[in-house]
Structures are given as C-alpha cells and as structure tokens.
Image 1 (cartoon, rainbow, N blue to C red):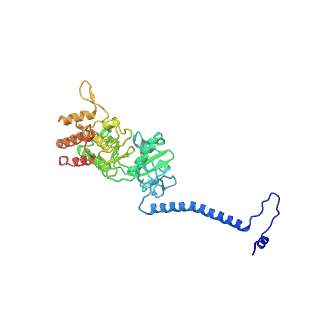
Image 2: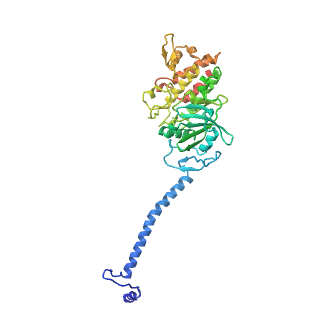
Image 3: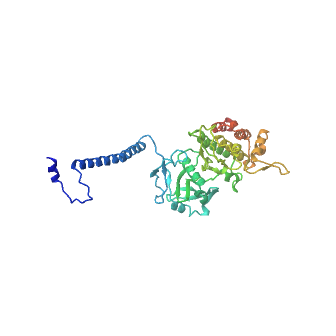
Amino acid sequence: MDDSITSSLLPTRPRTASSPPPLPLPVAMDRVFQALVATLAASAAILLPCLAIAYLCHRRTSGGVKPHCRCYSSSALPVTAPSRSCERVSSWSFYGSDVDCSLKMLSLDDLAGATGGFSPDNIIGDGSFGFVYRAVLPDGADVAVKRLSADRASGGAGNREFQAELEVLGRLSHPNLARLLGYCAAGSDRLLVYELLELGSLDAWLYGDAAAGQLPWPARLRIARGVAAALAFLHHGNDPAILHRDIKASNVLLDEGFEAKLADFGLARIAAGGPAESHLSTQAAGTAGYMAPELRAGVGASAKADVYSFGVLMMEMVTGRRPSWPVRINMKGKEVEMLKWAREKVEMGTASEIVDRQMAIQGEGREMSAFLNVARRCTEENPKHRPSMEEVVQMLSNSELN
C-alpha cells in the first residue's frame, strides 16, 4: 500500500492558517514509541531501588542481623500484654544496643490506678529524679514505680536518664541487679516499674529511725559482696564495660535475705574500651562524698571511679557515717572528711575506733581488718593503684572474710 492510499484512510480535520500540517504516520508512531520507552525507564528507575531496599530489609529481619528495636508505650495496651509490637529505628539506642522487648509497656492510667493516683501515702523513696511509689498492678503484682519529676522528664537530661535505665536494665540480668519489669512513656511522663524489694535501701537500714542495731556485721558483709558482684558483672561481664557512676547507699536495695540489688542506672554509661583504663569524657556525675577525686578534677569517668565509690560505700558500712558529712575529731570542733578520717585510722592500725557500735562486733576483728584493707585499696587517690572489681570480688571471698 502506497503513501497516497494510507493518507486517504486517516481521519482529517479542517486546517486553519495557524494549524501545523499533520505529521506523517511513521513519524507519529516513532514519537509514541519513544514516549513509551521513556515512561518504562522512569518506572524502572523508581521500582528497582524500592525492590532492592525491600530485599535488604527482608535479609535484616530474617537473617542474622538484628534490627534496632524500640518498644513504645500505648495507653490502649493492657498491663499484662507483652511488648511484642516494636518500631524499628536506626539511631534511638543510647548505647548502640536494643531495648529488651520482653518488658511490659504500661499505660499511665494503669500506673495511676495502681499507685492510688500517685498518692503521697504510697511513696517509698525519693531523690533528685522524683519519687518511687508502692503499687499493685491489676494482675495482683506488687511493684515499685519510679516516676521522674515533671521538670526532669521534660528536659534532655531526664529523658537520657530514663533511656539509660531502660537500655541497661532492659537487657541485663544478674542476681544483684534490680529487676526492671516495665515502663511508660506517655507525653512528658516517664515511669519505670521495678520488682518491689520489701526491705528498702541500705541507706534506710543504716540511718532510718527503726534501723538502729538491726543491721549486724554478717548482713553488711553479705551486702558488700553482692554490690561487688554486680559491679564486677557490669565492668567485666559486658563488652564494652558498663559504668554505673552513682554508687551510694540509697542505690543499694535489699531483698528479704539481705541480698543486695544495685539500682538506679540513670547515670550509667558505656566505657569506650577495656574496663581497666577506659575513660568516658562526660561531665562529672555522682553524689557528693562518693565521687572519685579525678572526677572532681574534670577527668572523664572510668571503671576505677566506680571502684572508688564502692570503697567509700564499704567505709560507710563499717562506720555508720555518711561520707558527705564531716567527722569531728577533737574537742575543739575540728572536722575532716569521713573518708580521710577512716583511712588514717586504718593506716595507723586503730580501725577499731571507727567501727559502728550499733553492730556490737564480737570476735570479728580479723574479718573487719581484712574488709577495711580492701576499702582502703579501693579509695586510693591514684586510679592506677586501685584494684579492679574482679580483684575486689576475689579479696572479699578471701578466707579471712569467711
């Protein structure tokens, strides 16, 4: 068929002076084909990357690579619901690790009901973070609810403390660590739910009104060993090591058998390297009286700073004196720091003068001397002269302390 016949079969339209002449059929078909090819190429350019991303995501979730997983609270979830619904994110994790998604996600309404509307009558502890409440969950479980105060929860520091406790206790398990059961993050509210330890804190047993004479030497030795075991696990049982950074009597909780449970990991951080010499360049953190001298001098925290704080705690348990309160050493009213006073007595061989008389020590002089020698080594001014927590555990297991 020639071009004249083909042209006669095409529809025609009136031509005006401004209308361009119609394109010949081969040219028009060629342009349609080019447009189709361009459309297919653009579609492929969009579709292929999407397919590649989907494939990689499938490999990450079904293969050996575990995605970062953030469990988030929802007021619609019942208290007993396990937190299996997770939002995958790439940068939320404060430590580069995952929050344990077995933690219960609790609603603010449930926790308010469990604490009697956060009644002052149910307060069992307090601190700079806020209050701790006794609570009974709808399933009958007795728990302790730690609620960050509004000003801390709304600020960056308070939220970091909340995340730190979630991520440390959410993924660790040890007999001497307080057990984290669940949490709630609703609006500006930040709450953590722990196992309830009926005996309360070591601080309350050392200084509370009803504590006089109720914490004998064997119980204090058991508590010290428990805290040492917890710190050795944090420093040497994890890679990289975990620094607690706030060892003190109020952060040591006790179960019914006077087994110590280390708590309050709001200041905890990961050490950048081995536990012995690694340092963390952050602001000085801790509590007056327990802080290592290098922290007060502006040097970054290390595992040896935790060792120092533990040594102070040991001295406190023997003397029954707060490390933040000075000791009057003569009739003229001269005062010195508790730790300096205790160390001088130990070094002079007169440690019996610093022993808390409420313990009614009888025949434990050799044990006490060995215990105080460990405390003295832990509180050396130079961090290099302090033992590691593994070494402390070994020393506290020495035959002289059995």
